[in-house]
Amino acid sequence: MLNTFHLRTFLAVVDAGSYSAAAEVLHMSQPAISQQIRALEEQLGEMRLFRRVGKKMVLTHAGEELLVSARELVQLATRAEQNMLALKGQVTGRVLLGCTSSSGERLLPRLLADFQPQFPGIMPELLIASADELLDALAERQLGLVLLEEQQRRRGLELTPLGSEVLVLLAPTGHALLKQEQVLPPSLRMQPLVLPRPGSPLRRTIEEGLRRRGVPATELRPVFETDSVAALLHAARAGLGLTFVPQSCAPPRSEGLGSVDLAGLPLQQEWFLGRLRERSLPRAVQTLYDYMLSPAARLILVRAGLHCGIGASR
Image 1 (cartoon, one colour):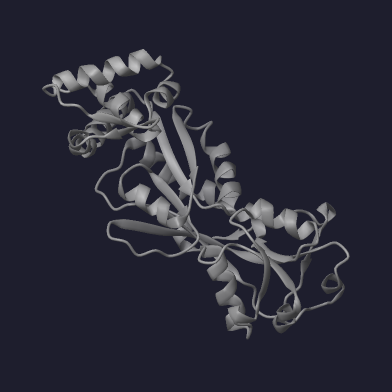
Image 2 (cartoon, rainbow, N blue to C red; image 1 turned 30 degrees about the vertical axis):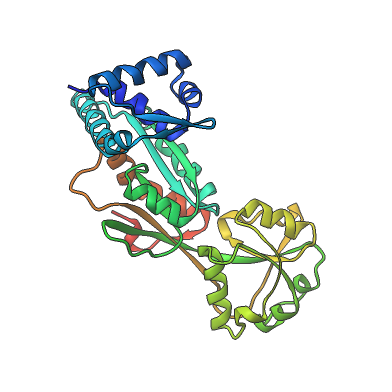
């Protein structure tokens, strides 16, 4: 019977890319990692699982064949351990969450600060990546939950609306547009803009919202593009251009930026909580999922500036 400790070590090497990196992750010595992999190879009939390519350890064909089963076996073992602890009233385990580089970086810590004291045995970890990378990782069960700003349609994916928030148009203190009571959207054709990268959910939301107000994307004048909301704010504060950010990210006016009153209905950023559509989730994942849809989480989101509809309560 395969040893789950050997399998966890095997997966750590796969994910980290080398014995030395896996040793740091597992707080073990590199010889101990080598010993664990060697023991697993012996148990599998002297099948080599890795080959060295430069400084990286790359899976052999046998290693690739083992990978999916190893993940499933480790997940089953972890779930069994957590279920046994749950019988004693304890919920434990790690939950890897994913979000894109937007206001999810601000929303999730606010929620987790309230969640963690209630469930100290659950250790959330946050991965920040593109929406496609997050969905791929979720499908491969490397992530437990994802926070997304855009409706997605993928087989096996279940998305629940959390709420929506206004996108605010920011300009550096003293900018001429801040002195106007209202600014018509066509005025943005003349303005340098600091925007999220093309193709990102936030960029699509901005472009579609402005298109509906008579300003097509071809008439915008981006001068700087980045996936980092923090970089957008710094660039706008430095005078590089105007920027749109979710309301939960907007700093106080005293921090060098002011909100431009753009005429018409405000642009809205939606938020969705995603998970795999399965009959049962690991208990730690299910616990965090239930909390994220709870009235307590909804109140935190409302205080952050979101409008939470029916889908955000449970």
